[in-house]
Length: 212
Length: 212
Image 1 (cartoon, chains in turn purple, brown):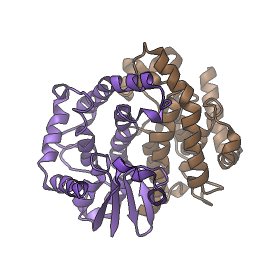
Image 2 (cartoon, helix red, strand yellow):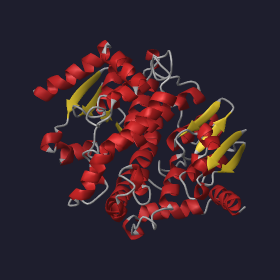
Image 3 (cartoon, one colour):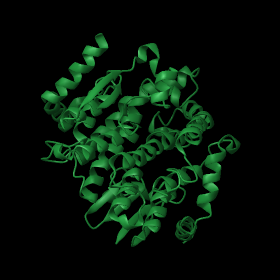
């Protein structure tokens, strides 16, 4: 049994979808960010970084979305969520997910998490970061739209662990002030993902626990 | 034959060291950042992101440091640079490298690459970012020092693709304004790495081409 620690609306949704895609046995545990639960000793014992997602396995706890997605693909190979036996093809999957983690998600985080990178008292700098998010995130998603997303899925005809991650970040685009008309292929991918039963199930599970 | 595109002083050093560790046949090609070569059509054809590292293989080009390090480990398994056959142990490697890529490197990038996240005309916001780097990078490396680096190597007794990556970011610490006395285990790891012949070879190759 795996335990996913998540917060609704966070990037943990990608791992949640992948667990369902893999047919993995799991429990989802909400971390209440509104009440600062991610900074409690109990949660810091799970993840010293105070972030989600974290995935508890029978061997220990893992973090970082690209890591968790690759772990799920390797742990449940029958689901064929990544070309794990081919170093180059697997690297292409990792390349896409690493770009989302270290560039796309980071640009988005400047919207409301600017205190990671400037003093919390510096409201002018925080506002400058927030204001630039539409520009930076649009540039990044235009690159994804034009050069990376092969279609219909990220890798082309084969669905993979890249798809729930792109979808998750795509759900933030309106909040990031991105004009979706500029990234029609990403928008179509988002619609394709939103129609999947597994995606709807993950979102429903997160909504249910959030309301509880 | 593999071709590594790098800029001296960049995170491409990690991949360079790993190529030598793997005994891989490679050529290293310098991208002249001082002359803006990373934004030329010729280089954008290699890597549309305009960044280094990029690794040209016989199957195509790959980017993103954690991706390249894992690819080298999988492509040259005899070098035993990662526990590639064990999903959990491999995920621990990926978790460490993903943290360096998406958190540690990103915090450092706010020193001089702030225009990724605020308007280039906003000198006050750029200065605020630069000024906060000692705080953010110290916090991150204190977590690495206390919770992640097992010693003597990142994973413990076994050297892996985590080590050249941590070493590479560690060489930036003085420039980031971090007091190394606060992270003695990272400092010892850096000294251990600097004494390795393969590390010295990679640095000498980068210095030689930089001077050419």
